[in-house]
Amino acid sequence: MTARDEVVAAIGDALGDVLEREITGLTEDTRLFDDLRLDSSKVLELLMLVEMAVDITVDPDDLDIDRLRTVRSFADYVESRQAIGEGVS
Image 1 (cartoon, one colour):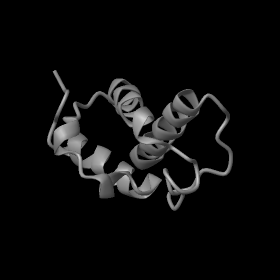
Image 2 (image 1 turned 180 degrees about the vertical axis):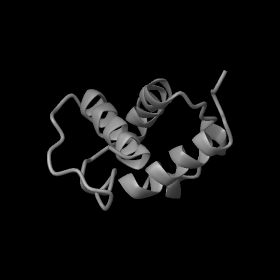
Image 3 (image 1 turned 45 degrees about the vertical axis):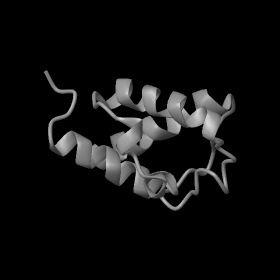
């Protein structure tokens, strides 16, 4: 499994927990709001779960909504946070 696959899997697991249902057929093109019906009240919970899963820190004030449009855009954001070492001790 590549690092990218691990990020996407962590996002999928977090989405399942937040949405309280199994997420099947998740691809990087899956739209979080349109396809999965993620709503704004669940975004912070999603961010917290992903932070814990991949050991990054997300400042919701710095997170542009475009980074949450698809699994791909969110995974890109997560990888960018990992690359700069956020959350790494």
